[in-house]
Image (cartoon, rainbow, N blue to C red; front, side, top):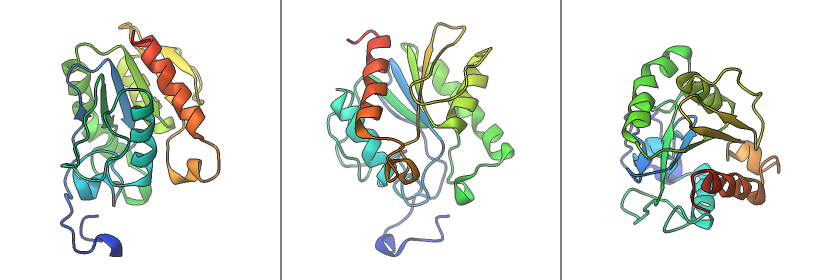
Length: 196
């Protein structure tokens, strides 16, 4: 993917490698998305950075008091998260945004490690069905409620999972996901994490 550049970014050097998670190591809220965008995180090297999904996500985190600014355009832009950590189920930009089972399984150890390292974690916000399936399996949620925006599930380890539609253009341009809907998910996550 890093070999195919969007015209607007043709002069930029793409990261083009697996994209790590990002945020506060003392986070009580973990946000898990699908994968880095081909011209977002795959370009910048930071998850949900430099694309429209990230614009929506970081603006919502800022409104919830979890980010110091509402935008994220590149790694050195000054963005800091407070009480939150952002990650993805798959670490490389998948072709057509559809990871294979093999890609998903190769990336699972990274998410598993983050779940261990984030010792203060209380809530996982999943962005989309794919992330919900991965997180639900990793946390052993059984029975698992059917995915839907605002759906909550309890994990055996005491973690709470809150579902959101993914802030992709397919959802935001069509109105399937609105800013108030995303804000409601993060308000709930903050409350469940003991912050409000």
